[in-house]
Length: 269
Image (tube, rainbow, N blue to C red; front, side, top):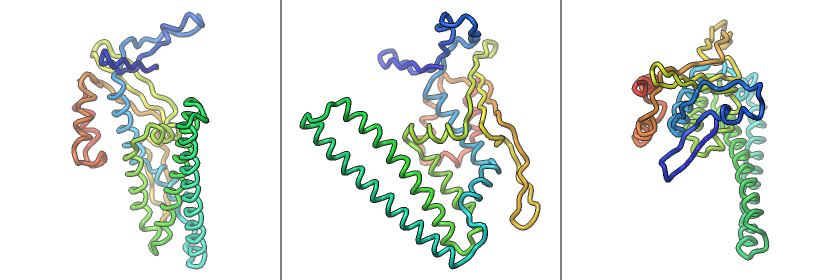
């Protein structure tokens, strides 16, 4: 699908362009979806559904545990680990400071015409990506530190997962969301249903995290029952989807505290 944004016509949508471009390859199968879909509405409803699947996945939680908890709790080794994490965080923050100073220098060069606008824009794009990567690394280390500082580290990991998950929910930059989606989502299918005048959506994940289950086998030992990779959302009416979701976000209620199922039901035709 390709986006089309025409502010003068109040148009901001996705549409399939395979039919427009199939002259390049006669073997290409024509797309049956001819109706466009509101871009803002589609992106918001996908974001909510993907977060819902991610939050409820036992496989995701198990991966978080394995990546952030020590194999066994040892006071001496934990202290060394905390010192190492602190040093790494300090080093990364100094790197951020240095990068920002370099950016200021290049801003001055751009203002004084020593570097072109195009060159400066490329520098800004590169800097933003680098700073985002460093911020994500710092967040990961802070989560590990939070877990290690608690004596009941195995009992507190879920609280840390919630903090980690809420931070993902609060992503505002497209780059942050894109990186998260690329890690977990393989493909998204959108199809127009002419009988109901609504869209049907399928989200294909890279892992089997749809309705997977964790079965307790012993003390703190879980066996994960594999779920599915695909989840569907049928009968989506996006005519008023954007305004509906924007009103939800204006409220003081956090995105996770209201029922996604209820919201999706209200948006169906």
